Image 1 (tube, rainbow, N blue to C red):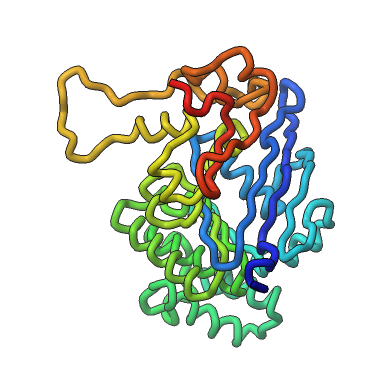
Image 2 (spheres, rainbow, N blue to C red):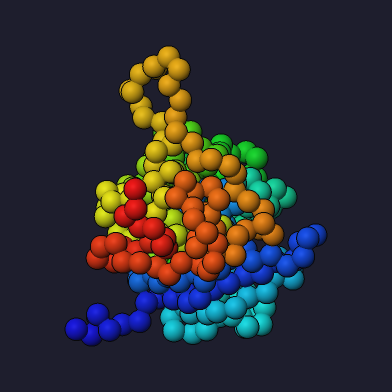
Length: 329
């Protein structure tokens, strides 16, 4: 009973972000609500420009200058919004960490990998240079870097893409964070390396009891890696639920469009047959409609869709979708 009443590790409530643009203020995120328990895995999917990476940056306190936030982000029950930069610096790399999608830009090219993996250990755990170096070797060995002790003084460009991603994972895990955010961690890798890196992340999350937020545009990756899934469009979660339930009962028209556009391996080539597509393109932030963000691109759009952001409607147990026309043909 006590475990059921334990507050979630991460709780995001009514989070909205307004960014300055050349055309004036634009609502980049609207009414974002979700939670993440210790040991739980959560996926975030959607087209480029839907707000996935902006959500991750908000959770890490790394939003661009001028961003205005409303709502709440709580970690271990403590409110993070409004905290000074010094507090965020104590959290990042310590209680929360992030794996970025492009390791070559995430790693500093002028510092050795040993120095970069050891840095959070010295900053947050107060280890000596010798202790941090020894711990860095152990971390690199754990993520599969061969001859880690010998390669500690090598630079990022001396490693392959897959090895660099493993190094960024070692950096993120150095202090044993409670929350791990992985933003498209396999984008720059081939299929074989993708599988290896995802399996490694899954093993480490289970091994250390961390909560994982995995951001991806790859539906297959999400299907096999997380317990719950959020579908984002236009800065809003339009559908969310247990991954298996959501994938088997697609409710929102946007989610249905995403799945219909997937290429099917082995389907063969049929002359003149084209994959279904979602009409139009993702609008600019300043052009988002005031109501449902998918209005206009959605084939079911009616005037009422533009009136206000739809409420989340129950679809199944723990499964909701924001649409006023759920079930309509």
